[in-house]
Length: 299
Image (cartoon, rainbow, N blue to C red; front, side, top):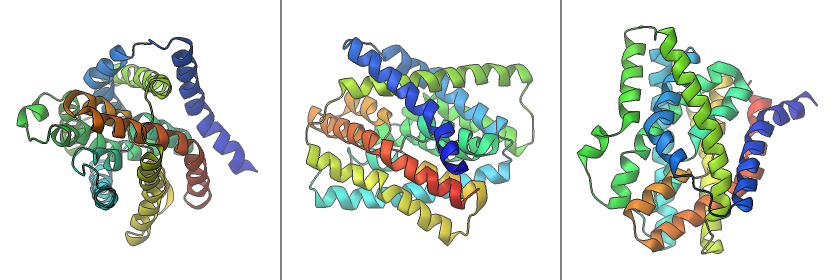
């Protein structure tokens, strides 16, 4: 019975905040979340990366190890995505981000924190840092169908990851005033982004439910199965295994839609919007199931 109480403790805050955002979106259909998006990209996400990794007590060795596992996971997600999109005769370049970029930051990190404490948050951040980096680089390249090195140089998250890795490598502690600042920025962003996700569910539309259901299956069902395969192959156990499994089960990130809306044709944007909505709704069922197994077998 304890595991069910733990499930409730972990998921209730996250789902409640998403629900509050959904309520606000229903109450005010013109609710503008552009400020939240700007805040997250410029300040919140870089702060979350720094805070989650440093507060979790992650060493450079742990970070590099799980950053490596994240590369393997996302590569496998990409292969699955290519297969799905090719079979469905979709744009396998512009629509690929919905498969390879799950919502590991704003949903994954708080769930891992509540499930496994600060160490779980730190490992989750190691995985999420790669996803964040790709959101503001590869995601844009795929949406534009063009490589632009300036995109990397203009990404605050790129510098946040770089600085954090250097501090970890040289074992330099961050000043306390920096940690206090990024903590406030990070927690503030998590709440606002979860609420904006709820708002987005009232504003984004499903244009092809059948196609969205298929692609969402690839994200929230095949995703955690890939996580299990990686855990078994590399003999990962304990908290780290649980975190990888949870992060693998996250739905498609809303940033995929925001980037696509800036650089891709409307048809692509509509397809991505459909996948995000359906995968997020499906995850309300699949995440509790995945979390149950993570807490039961990897604790």
